[in-house]
Length: 260
Image (cartoon, rainbow, N blue to C red):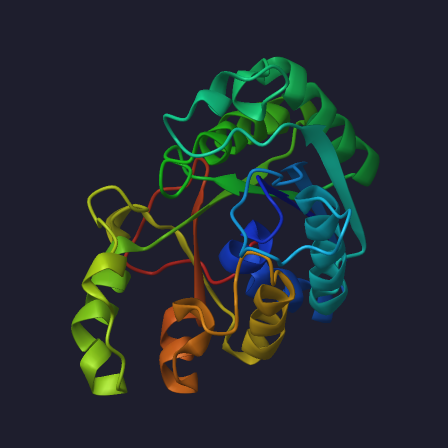
């Protein structure tokens, strides 16, 4: 059995980007380890959501623990860097933010985890961090450097298949789904073209676990959000495949179907 380390920026990223793969690997008997760079303390949440005296970081830690239980994560650890906030915000340059940390400094910490776990696989993000979030871009930089330091050979960059997403948006009315105009993504800056993708992991058998893990992050993803409120068939079309670029592999017409 293999050990796979999934590296993410904030609590909830793991469920959205790789939750199905994590659940599948755990169900197949592999060891799944989750490393989160920050506590996500700069996330937005509804007024009155937190309990008296509770801060967002501690709430998101509780949500993350529940999501890990659902996905079958064997070990979860947080590196403890500050949440850098969205692109262009002053918090990007705050002392201690993940965006400001030296790549080699953070990579050496992550490499220690890879060594300790004797990991065969590491996942990070593509070079745009999926959608340009500073912490996601830093996950890409730190993750790939950590793999070099630890000698981890199988490195995958989780990404968004923008061509698949464009097809889904065009087909949305057929599923009874109306995507509000203000929620339509800018496909020119989201993910990568299908031609770059090397690996497509079928997670349809694990969509219930993925959905429950996403819902566990209640401070960030409400049951009425677009992510969770679409009909089951549309949810399966949206989330039934998780997409990756394997470092060093050439894309081909026949994509890989596993991280192993």
